[in-house]
Length: 218
Image 1 (cartoon, rainbow, N blue to C red):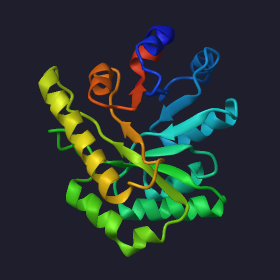
Image 2 (image 1 turned 120 degrees about the horizontal axis):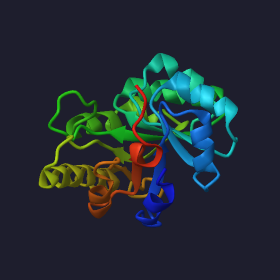
Image 3 (image 1 turned 30 degrees about the horizontal axis):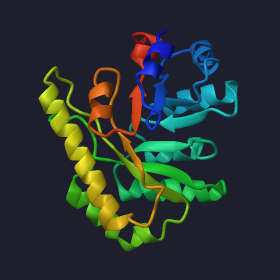
Image 4 (image 1 turned 45 degrees about the vertical axis):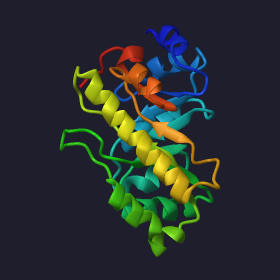
């Protein structure tokens, strides 16, 4: 585990999400004992199982694609949901947050990669969502910013361009819809293979798994 070395490379204004998917509780606890408090999972059941076994001050981030019928299981404790790409999902998060007397932080996921397999909004879809009367009624969610995943490639100029596109989306939304909301401050981009480039391009939150925990089990 190279947690200390990685942590030294991350500026104080950038949040490190340690991606613990497929990793056992013991491995998470080892990183927790080094001071890490923010962990990311991409499967609801796995996150619920781990949350029940680990310290209560851990901030759990759901970083994978989330189905609406599974929101209820994480609503009591999840700190942030990264991959929000529809009004329907936001409405369900709001509904379940309300049931638990909570406000849940969310990030709007944008499609910035060349690969067609990745989820995410485009600019027009985000505008339609944010300007809808249905969105205005949601009182138990807080949009904290944006997230996106770059193409898996060795072409650094392409990666920089994609991260730059996400920052442009963030700046547009900040100026147009969230100018009076200091809480709209998060640009979640960058993973084990490209997090240093992402930070250079303006990331405020990176999601790092294999560099910390080693290659994940299938």
